[in-house]
Image 1 (cartoon, rainbow, N blue to C red):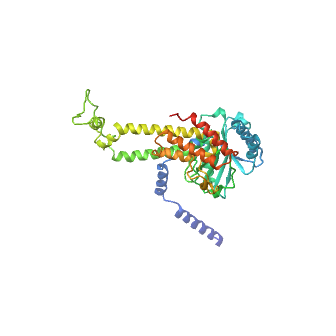
Image 2: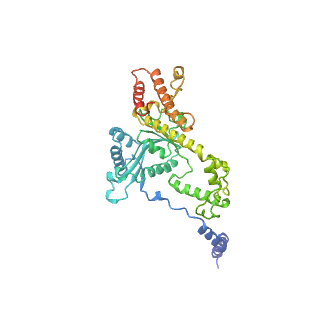
Image 3: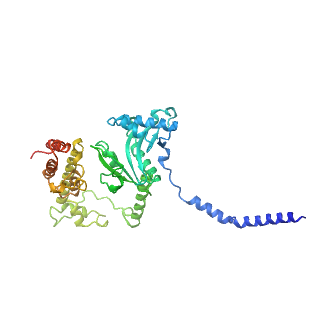
Length: 402
């Protein structure tokens, strides 16, 4: 046998030995397979069945067709927006759009293929994006596509390094954006967006923080998992699902001897079997019954009425100068002239606090102070003065005359 043949056989033997050492034992392989089989599978994401795509003006035929469909959608659903402005932003190469697509193959390539869309511009260096347009086709309304559209955009935004969304919402869109997690309180430092986005008269600036570790398309599943976990923990210590008391006998009457008329309701509830065992005390029940309950009901009703009045003013087109406090870093002499500033957002916070306004007339007084402040600071020919006059004329129509 030649030396080359011996060397080849030796190499094959070494190779077989090495492969045998690297291969896992049979019991290890079986345990690994068992572990994979036992690991819980992630539930299917309902958003996976929604056909969507990110579109930008890359010059390709398919992208241009979809951009034309988005332009047509925004023009139909946002009639007050100038069509030239929509075209300029949708086809701008710095803007991108998330498009919801109709799965029907018969409408592919037509305007009907686009059933919803959001056009936005990202500023990667500042880690935020401005939403320019958001719309869902009229034929697809009330199907939840608005929420799905925003959740898909948030999920995609994480891949672009976006921490915040900013948009200017008109009166009709504020409610929608609030449901999607947007707020009128801008927490992002002003230096990150100042000078990059345009201010719009009559629009309300709103912001949404996009948490990088949250999959917004799975929020309902996350909440359900948290609920199940909490209920499971409660069941380990609670007895409510283990102890069942018999129903009260017909004609049952509690022993109310020595109980005052005010405390009868609490004493009656306390004598029901299981109430004391659940941890309730007579003092707890008294706090939720009788006069205190009536007082809470009246307070909640006043709070609800006052919030409705503030919102009615906010919804008016001429209320835009009063929705947020005057920025004294820009209007440096404002506090030299106006000693007691007030605005609609401050009034709303006071109402929600619950103990500031004792009557509707107190809210009306703050509204008039807001109007008078504006008239005092601004020239009578300015648009701000005109808005103040319009608010003043509007207030008597919503506030009762006392």
